[in-house]
Length: 205
Image 1 (tube, one colour):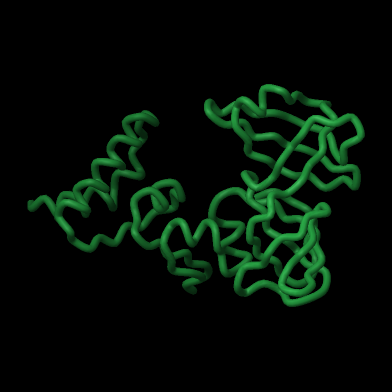
Image 2 (cartoon, one colour):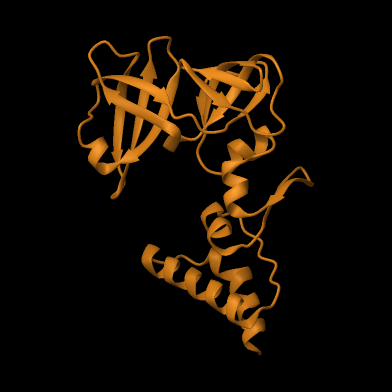
């Protein structure tokens, strides 16, 4: 078996093996190094998004036998072209917005729209948790429901005054100042977002 064949063999089977998280990451990085050293095109089929984004030059997302988007990992995550890709790849908030003049307004912030977005009217806006800011504030627009400590990061689950739930991902330093029940101001950083026509129930995927 050649080195390229070994890499392809590992790439198609190792995901199903139960491995320690650190060993898994090291093996993934080693497979990626071999791919780059050998320079052989490899088709890697996986249901693990972290593996796909970490190992591939280009990632294809399929649904019901149709290719939804083929792009670099960075473009796929930051610039999804369909609602399916926005919700399937990574965590996403679905928030209500209004589209006007190639922008949408969400929680009082004007956000630029990605290609493929709705052109006007009420919309569902897909916002990544890392684009959400949560600031302690007694007269804020929401409250913290829970805080999950993830080492260098914290995930903050909040509920707005209108009942909508919003997930934020912040540094552990920012998360240290928050606890369940803390009144907060939830806002959105002005990063490009995908917006689709109509409004779906507020949810986190």
